[in-house]
Each structure stands twice: as C-alpha cells, then as structure tokens.
Image (cartoon, rainbow, N blue to C red):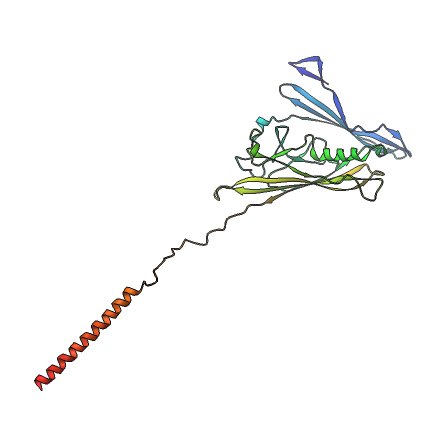
Length: 320
C-alpha cells in the first residue's frame, strides 16, 4: 500500500499490510469446503500530517456444504481511524471525573481511554472497535473469539496469550488517572492497575488449558472536597480474570465476557441534627444569694411582727 504525499505517489513510501489471525488454507473434507472466505475487513490507521501509518486485514471464513445448493455472499469492509495525541485528548473533568466521561488510562506515557471488547453483528469479537468505559456506568459485554482452525498445532500458551491480548486491546493498560484532568507529568495523579491472572495449568485434564474467559474490571471511587461541590476521584482499579479449562478438540470459538463495575466508597460526614445549643456552666452555690435574701426577709418580717405586738400591748395598758 502506497502513501501519497502532496498528490504524488512516492514509490519508496510503502506500508505493509499485516494479516490478523490468517485462516488456514481452504480444503475439502466430508463433502464440505472448509475455510471459505466470507468477509474481508481492512483496518487503516492514518495521520493528518504523515498519511497512512499502518494497515491490517482480517479474514472471516465459513464452511459450505457441496451437496446443498447454498450461495455465499462475500463482504468487504474498510475502517479508517487515527490515534488521538495525548495533548489533544479532552479532559474527563476538572479536577474530578464527570459521570459518563471516559476513564483515562496511560500506556508508555500516552493518555488514552479505557476500552473493553465489542461484538460484531455475527457475535464475534471485533479486532479493532471497542466500547469506551464511561465513568460511573456499569457495563457488561459478551462476544466470541475465533481460534485457528487447526487447534492440534496450537499450544496452551498461544491460546492464553491470544485471549489476554483480546481483553487488553491493541495497547496494554499500565496506569489509570485518579482525576479527570490528570497529566502524565504528574506522577501523583496516576496509580497502577492491580491485575490478578488465573493459573496456567488445568487440574485433572491432560488435553485442557486454563484460559481467561471473563475479565472483571472493578473500580473504586469516592467524592472529596466541599459538600456543595464534591469532586469524584478514583481510589483503585483491579482487573480480575476468571478462567476455566478449555479442551483443544472440537473448539473453534471461545465465548468471553467483560464486566465493569463502579463502587462508590464515599464516607459522608454525619449531618447536623439542628441548631447548636449553648451549654451554661453554673456554679454549685448559684442559689446562695437568693437563700440569703430569703432568710433576711424572714428575719425582717419576724422583727416587725414583734414590734407591732409590743405597740398593741402598750396601747391596751394606757387606754384601759
């Protein structure tokens, strides 16, 4: 494939077309034509300044019976896409994540969006198109990964690597952004993703291989800052692979599932129960002045009564 520059085709500027999981050669078996190409998908990566960067082709095959009068319709698809530069990648919040915004990850210093597997119309896993993980929204996808037609020539390690690459996508995720405006130059704004793989060997099965069939992405997040304007940030992320034994014989498609869950770990403060009350601290003998005044008043009343009684006695003596 040539790359035109300034409307002129330069013979030395060429890009090789890479075949993704090329199928086996077509052959006849039990009155059936095996590995007939039914669809061809081209994926072309381009840049606005440098032209085409890479190109790949994927073949989808099917089996056609010779006895039946069946027809085959071939499909040809071309996908054009470009990598978004890290400095041009839009923020997912400032600083906290916005619900529904893409979750930011880093791979070799380049900021990207976390993505998971996406199925085609026939149920197979797409090689290039993936679903973007949106902050705060749980997701679940399922599709089937096609293995090589000749499984006898494939070892367990090959199948494991192929399934892991399908889950991870084109670029392996290394770190995730704590906030929606994280910058690669700030190391404190990034954390490493915890990955828990499955065992390599299968138990009590000589013709089996332990392969990952489910990827569970667990994301813990919290809200920090003022109650009037809380900011969402990620506390931690874990990739947990669930595995099961896979038999080599009679297996050409492996169903896989990806699950994304967000868990809110916010620890809200206890809300106020009303207006604050004043606690008065009074002395132990606060009523002492009142007691003194009451005793004085009682003494005064007693003296006054005695004086009036004396006056009445004297009047009775002088006038009677």
